[in-house]
Length: 178
Image (cartoon, rainbow, N blue to C red; front, top):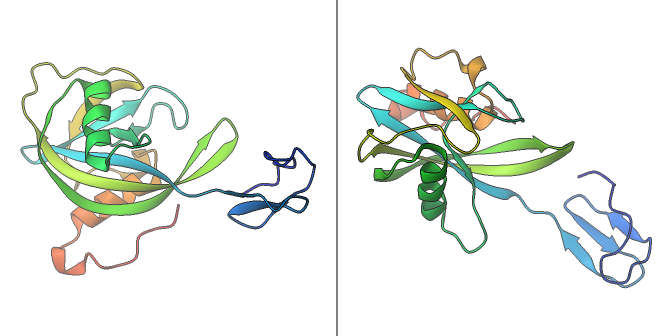
């Protein structure tokens, strides 16, 4: 967490002190906490391939990504995932199942956000209306076992594919750090 916050949001004094994940006002005692943001992503299977999106905007514009996005307030992870996939690809999901979670970082306008990505697996109900929309410029189906992980935008996506590639009995190994 950087030290860009100096003024207390309650009393307006220039007395905010950075204490790792929170700022405390030394004048009035107000505390402002910075917690991890929640995001969702999905491995959408079509036969032995997985759908990957191409990012239309920064960060990592032009790199491959798993479809998904941030969870809104008062929204479940599953509802967020269904909403994001409709917005990005005009798809309806079927057989949604939790797969894993991985920490990630998301750099947006020179601010680095700490994120926990919840990864799911599923199939699409049908592919007829699938089209890139919102922050997706394109999509493609690739074999997840053959994909060069350096083509992926985020460390959480790379870790999800590493887990997918491992035999089930070895899936307890530690993932890469963001």
